[in-house]
Image 1: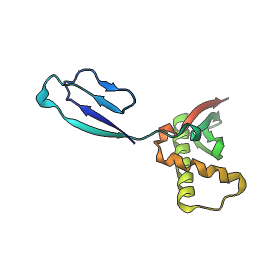
Image 2: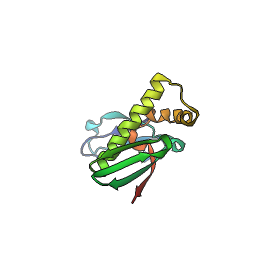
Image 3: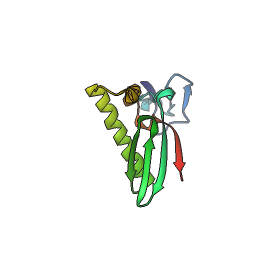
Image 4: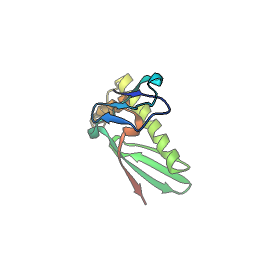
Amino acid sequence: MTSVVVSGDAVASAPVGTPGTGILRLHSERSSDLHRYRLPIPEPAPWGLRLDIQVGQEEGGFWASAPAIDLSSEGSDPGEALLNLIGAINDWLTYLRDEHPDLSQDLASQARYVALLDAPYYSWFKDFHFVA
């Protein structure tokens, strides 16, 4: 997990930082108002584990699918379908992590995606494809 250190207050000037360090500093015009905060920022999902998502429309609503782990969901709009898919992915990966089920050969490769649970869900995805 990366941390961001912020020094300064509401009267701060433009942020400056050192690239690659995870440190951002804001300089205050009043030195008596300096404060330090540490803000943890979770690491994103590894690129090789990120999922491709397909989203499409059907009569009565929308669907979203993650083909690599063979999960789909539906919703009244694309956003709801995606949120439902995120919930389904989370539930499936949590089950794999906690229960360690015996998986068939065609599902065994999905166990590698359990590492996504350690990353924020907004970084779980590589590409979104809208299917007509």
